[in-house]
Length: 105
Image 1 (cartoon, rainbow, N blue to C red):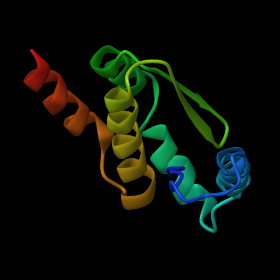
Image 2 (tube, rainbow, N blue to C red):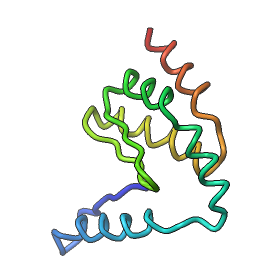
Image 3 (cartoon, helix red, strand yellow):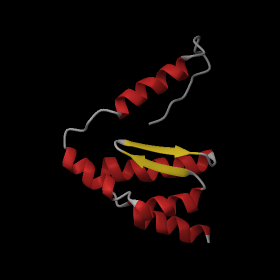
C-alpha cells in the first residue's frame, strides 16, 4: 500500500490521515487466517536476512505487521513488492530475492 499526495490537495495533514487509515486497514484479520499464517511463514528468518543484505533496509515481522525501516526508497519498494507478492499473490519470496541478489553481484 502506498500513500501519495496530489499537488492540488488543500489539507497538508492528508498524508498523516491516510497513513492512519492504512494502519487500520493493515491491522484487519484476513478471512482465511491459516492461509495468511502459511504465507507469513515464507517470510521467516532467512528471507528477511537476504532482503536486508539486498536493500540495506531493516525488515521486521511482528504479528500481522511487516515493517521496513531505513534504506533507500528503491530498497523499500523492492521489499514492498516481494512481501506484497508473497502475502497477496502466494509467490514464494526466496527465489525472487536470490535472483535479485545474484544480479547485484
